[in-house]
Image 1 (cartoon, rainbow, N blue to C red):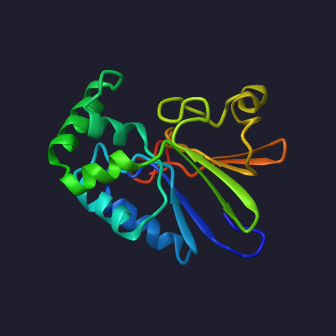
Image 2: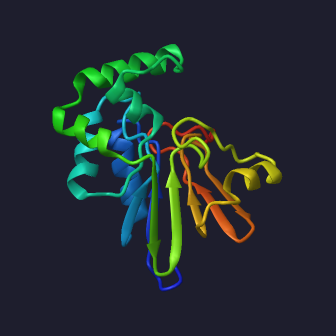
Length: 186
């Protein structure tokens, strides 16, 4: 994403403890002026502390995802069996500084860069942690979700599927999943 003045902002989401995938994506991104993350640093893969350490020590603006929430609360009843097992495994292995960091993540983030207002959540503006906004969502339903958000750019995660939509002068963007893509492109 590039602002009007040439600021390059990288947007990622759904790392899911997959450090090798994160490193590959960061290398592919190249030079960015800022990196934003739409949540789910942990879950599924085996390196939750290494991933969280990277975000925590670099101060990368990040919102809480549903897997981050599950890893610090142990609330996993809505997950399928494999996601439940991964969340509980992660919860047991997180260091205290990383647990504290994940607990501190906001559910939504509003920032302005070069006069462009950016709003970021993991799920949707209506339900920041759990609601999915899929690329094929009808235009009227998307408008219902984002129409009242006071921002020119709305960043989402959660689906693991890339999406770029424009509606009423707003860019709605989901970068897809870093650690467990679901776009059928290996």
